[in-house]
Each structure stands twice: as structure tokens, then as C-alpha cells.
Length: 274
Image (cartoon, rainbow, N blue to C red; front, side, top):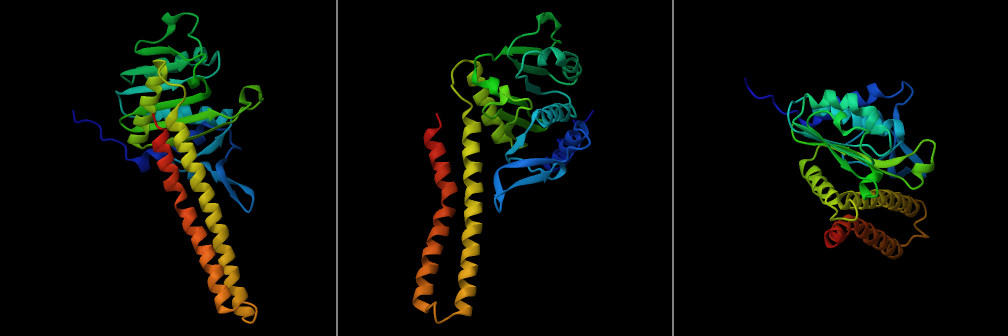
């Protein structure tokens, strides 16, 4: 029998977001984009218009929906291994029946949780348990598969999340094979006790935050330059050609400086990478 064709990223994105929406209450239709604002207002995006490799703010319900949807997407093609994390005590116990169903479609499932279930024998065949209590991984919700198709959702608890009634987290989903490979390497290192943080997440967070900052400031300077041109047209007596030229040079230099910020952020990430 011919091997099943891999799912293309765009198709996988549509399937994933439909599955997420199906798992959410009817009134939940939007997610807040992280590090982004328009005229100092938060930016909200429709669930079906979310983009991969973009950071969003998740509450407990949307975070669970994304992790579960990634697990379902992973089972559309049999075989391969799935990594699932459970960040609170009791979550793994509640998920045992579902893990049993998922394990029937996959070669293996790696489970990360604070504590094992009361009886390890209740874990389905092919499910391997890793204790993450006291490790950096306890702050992350992860659902990851590295092939057929590669897909990952990951989010990190925001400060104070454990004490909140509706804990929030920062994260994203991706279908990029190289990004997923970097996270697999980091997770493996942490499980072996060889790391102190999830470097790939920190680096991508820094890059996304920087590019969002640049986009906002570029937009602001663009508006200021347009305003300057209109003023020069209305009052040429106040805005002499020499003064106009100096002001435009300063604005253009600032915009060029902003454009180099993402590159400098990438270079800094390269220096800090272990």
C-alpha cells in the first residue's frame, strides 16, 4: 500500500485552527496578539486567522484547545512520536484514556508531567513518562510532533499564572521543521538535566518582540514624515528647503536604524546560544 502523502503546511494550518475552534466555547472567537498594539490598543485576531510563528496570549481554555488540537492533527498520519506536557498535578491522570487512544495511532508518546500517575502500570503501551517537577519545563505547555506533519504548540506561563483563577501564557504554534528540531534538542537537554532554560523559546520571544517594536516605530516615523511633507506644502515660508532636508535626513536615519534592530537581535541571539 502506498505511503500516505504528508499534509502541506497551509492545509495543516487550516485543519489545526478548525480543530481548535471546535474545542472552544461558542463565544471564544479571538486571541490577543503579543507585543503588538495599534494606537495603544490591544490587537485581537480571529481564531481562524491566526498565523504560525506568531506569539499570542492564551488562557487556560485556549491553551488546552491548541495542545489537544495538535495531538489530533498528529494522528492524521500513523506512526511517529508525540510529546505532550501536563503542567498541573492531576492533568495526566485525567488524560490517560485519551493517551490510550492516541497511542494506538502513533509509534510512541513522550509524556512530561510533574508527577507520575498513582499506578505507572496504567500508562498505555508506548507511553514514556518523564517527571518535570522542579525543572524549567514545568512552566511550559507543549504538544509536539516532528514529522508527518511536523507540528508544535508551546506556551510559557506568564508571571503569577499559578496564583490566577484563569492563568495566562505566552506562546505560538508552528509547522517549521527547523524550529521544531531546535525545541526537541532543548527539551532533550533539559530532561537530561543539562540545561537551565528553554533557549529556543527565549530567543524567538526576543526576536518577535523586537520586530513588533520596530514595526510600530517605523509606522510612527512614517506618519511623522507624511505630516512634515503636508506642513511644508501648506507653509513653505516656515519650512525652508534646507530645514526640510535636515529633518528628513534625521528621520530617514532613524528609520534605517530601526530596520537593523532585528538583525542585531539575531546576532545577539547567536552570541548567547550555548
